[in-house]
Image 1 (cartoon, helix red, strand yellow):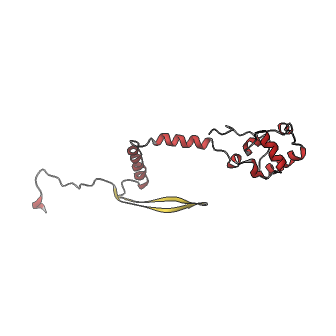
Image 2 (cartoon, rainbow, N blue to C red):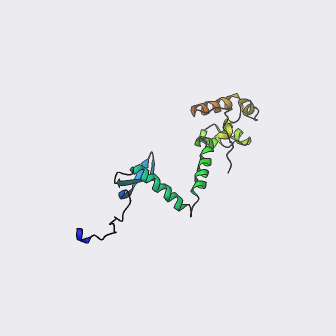
Image 3 (tube, rainbow, N blue to C red):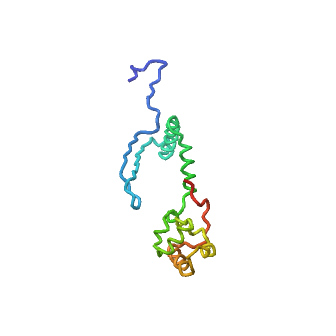
Length: 164
C-alpha cells in the first residue's frame, strides 16, 4: 500500500455526508372515521455526528425552499390558519329543520329569515316573542331543543354570519 502513495497527494473519501442510509414508506392511516389518510415512515441512519431528527428537519427546510419555486407554501399556511379561525361549530351551519321542531315553530322561524341554527341562537327570547304566531309554548319548545344540544338563545358567536 505504501508503494501506491504519491508524494503530495491525499486519498479522500468522496462521501462527506453524515447520513448513511435513508428510506421511507407511505402507509395507510386512519384517524377516527377517516380512512383516506397517509402515514409517512422515514428510516434514517447517521454516522453519529448528526442527530437524525436534525437531519430530517434540515432536509424538510431544503425541500420547502425548493418547492417554493412552484407553490407559495407560506400563503397556503396563512389561508389555512385564517380558515381555522373562522370555523364554527358545525351544528351552527345546519338547517333549523334538523332541530325537528313542530311545523308551526319552523314556519315562524323561516318567516323571520331564520334558516340556520346559528341564526337562531343569536336571537333573544324577547326578539322571538315578537314573531307573529310564535308564542310561549313554541318558545319553550325551541329552548328545550337547543338546550339538548348545549345551545341557548342569545348566544354570541364571533364573525357570524359566515361569509361565503
